[in-house]
Length: 244
Image 1 (tube, rainbow, N blue to C red):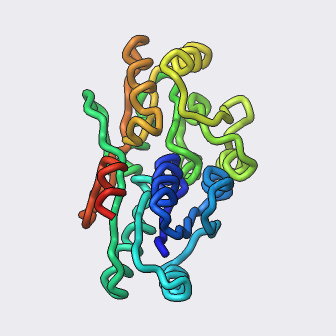
Image 2 (cartoon, one colour):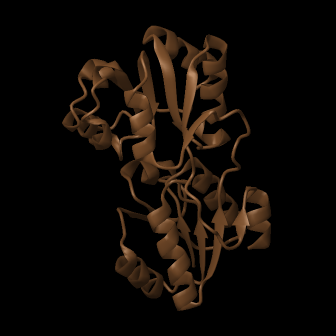
């Protein structure tokens, strides 16, 4: 059985292609949303965050013979755990990661704290598209009233924003990715001067955010991908599945 660490739209495509090759697949995802992405496929699904010991138990119990890591580029804890377990247990590990997009990244940061310091010293409305996991870190910003947060419209995500002190008028609950035109409409409606994005790649709608921002003269602020040395890294799904 193959363990597919997922939770992304890419992981659904990979699961479909593995099923076409008659593999048995167990998909793990940290969130209910990730589970919904593959709910109608003939795979086993494990929803919920797993620590190192829980992952090891799952791999042994399900007699996993191969790990395919298709988690989000910023989910580094799970990736590091999977890499370590693959070495300890002698299980083959493959990594799929979306290719990074090339464009001018004048304001880019590897560390979220440095990005936050930068934002605290700008003038004008800011649109965060980083998700809700680290939203608490923005709680104390002196210009927080100028920040708008675009997140998945789930109770969990909205609650986290509210607990960080964001008002309903600052929370934009929408499921992407979005077209360039839609992004432009959002930017205009909220008078956005800065858009904050991850290097999420084409699947995550990054280029549509950036191109829309360029047309309106909006500054793009980038939280860069963490640096990890992945073994057996693929940026093309077909090449990955062919190798397997």
